[in-house]
Image (cartoon, rainbow, N blue to C red; front, side, top):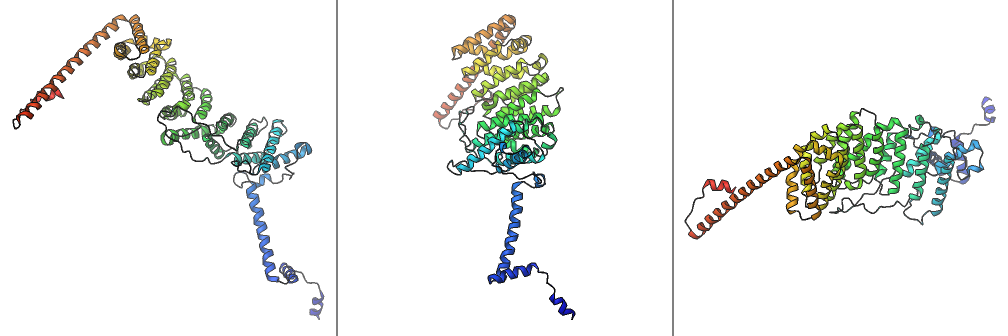
Length: 505
């Protein structure tokens, strides 16, 4: 009786029964159920992948963008209400995360133009001051900029030219610059935004973001490096917590350039940024900053391509000496260490930098390095390359340098007088010869007695060297005579005196 009553009650339909009944209607219960279940699993997996693709789960968590109202990204900001503009702003940023291959101008033309239009709308919206950079907006902005800007550059295959160390190669322009330029403009306005919460922004503009940004300085497009220079300067000024990391990261780039690759496109731009950074260092200088000078800036004189960034490098070095004049002797020692021997163009740059450094050098620091310094200058005065010789002579036209020389003429004149004397006797270039006569005249007016002493000493050295040369000539003649006697006499061997051998050697 109880079974009969229960059998009349409606049964609860299970999911499997539903699938089976649906499958039986089509005549294939088992196969349809399997297909339906696979479709469910596939759609679930696809939706999860889309979430991961839309917002990185590590850097830009999906939870941040949850709760943001979905707005059609192709609407104009004028067509939505004020409370929807923020959601529209984030929607447009997400749409702009799609990357196109710009190497083929005929591919995806409409999509590329639409993305460019959206980027322009974003720039106008931020520049108008209407944007509110909440955490979801900051996350979306950093994500969009990272996806568009951070990329791997192709390897550089450059021919090693013999005489073109200072020549700038033809610039390579990125075909995607029409989009990249707008993204850089947007990023710069974002960083410069007055109401930007730095505490929140630094969670996304973190050291990993900064490293990828610094890698972009190796771009061959000079327009991109110029934008990066401005952006990094703003970052350094606004995010004080990142300053030590930026300095360390740039040092590592310089170390790798100097000691490993000697290839990097953005050294000049990085040094230009650090020129203003160094000028803002507090006094007294930290040991960290001095180490940057010794280990990064001074070794930058070594590479063959120093001419590309020498102007910026000189400015950085001079800024350090301006902060701490005691560093002048250290800088000059570094210049002497990396002084070029066979590269005359590089030698001209070193002489120009040396003059700027000497202008800021005190008497005490000058006396520490004047002996090795003027030995090197003496070699430059006597250089067979007329431009090097002329540039070395021009040091005497600088009043501060001349004052340093005057006060230390007892040490300096004996070091450079032989080079001046040789120039006045047999230098092939008339301009160099006249300059040597002028410098010698300056020394005569300064201390004529010392000049006469140096002249006498030089004559004595010349006479002694002439006597030594004559002795060597006579010794060689005796050796040749002895060799000829041995050759004619056959078995007759004439012994050579040990003293004669010593003179010949």
